[in-house]
Image (cartoon, rainbow, N blue to C red; front, side, top):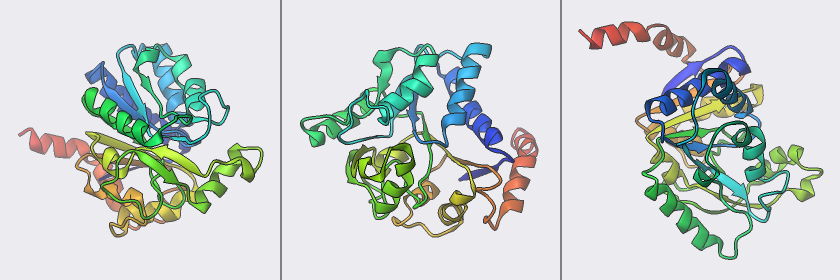
Length: 263
């Protein structure tokens, strides 16, 4: 796991956007996994800027979103489908046929989850998966206790998650209690993972999943198993890390490592 420490939220967002942009420029038909929530908003804003100012081309990109609230229509203002179109898709030249977001209104949720997994496989798998992290350590909606081998499925939301997400709704009573989410196992199959975290409220869980034990009670700790996971934190989210000096040394000496390997 590579840990990149940045100063501000904007620095974190720009660093994540550059990782995604490099992937798209390297492989124009990249399959990108996307996340919702307040943390990735800055990353999406920078991707839009890169598209408009530097010609970053989304025309062949295929996307798969992590999750969606069960019971919300795609046009509901708090659905993740609405979020993605409002904050990214409508501002870039992506082909709507290449956009995949789990559907909150389906007759057979289990069948849909199997279909979603099959669509990811048909696309060739996810090249880069963007993640945020919940205050209880979840990635996607894989709440504490989720199996590291779990696949796309319906998940009951934890009370803490419902409380955290209530700020997006008129009242806590409106927050759905179930969601369709990629599983931890699905996420770990992405070739590269980029997780972003911001704010002092995320500091306790960041030290747990980065420097703590591997445990299903903090599902983000599964990233310790991934061969190419990048974690990008702003200063507030990194405040409790014990190995900050080492992470910064790696960041500042990457060029030295490259020179050594190229000899």
